[in-house]
Image 1: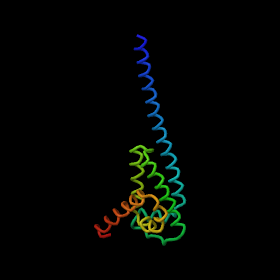
Image 2: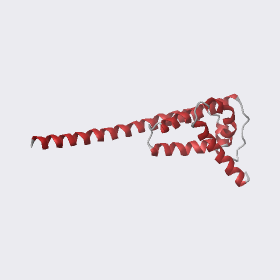
Image 3: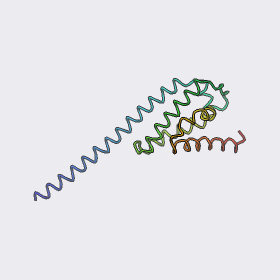
Length: 150
């Protein structure tokens, strides 16, 4: 009888510990989302508005390249690098990565980032997976543009 009680307590303990682990994992993902959203908002404030709008809207003229724009692009790609490696290391939930990646793709497919990537890509050559990932996103945009005649 004592063995049965101990077995039930052990099972309940396993459930409690497992539940706490799930809660903690969700809490970490929520904290990551808040932190990375904050960092993204900071990047948006630093990025020249006309360049950001031109990146998102093909009807807007692309501003000429300058050091501020190249620096902001570098900071943005560094941010994407951080998020990418959190995902690859298994630290972010799949649904969180899906949310982030949609915005990453929308951003990197823009004309400003297409142009500026060529200037900052060398900063990331140490990452054997990241550069091909970015290039694949960039290439998919070029392929789509060529196919649509744009």
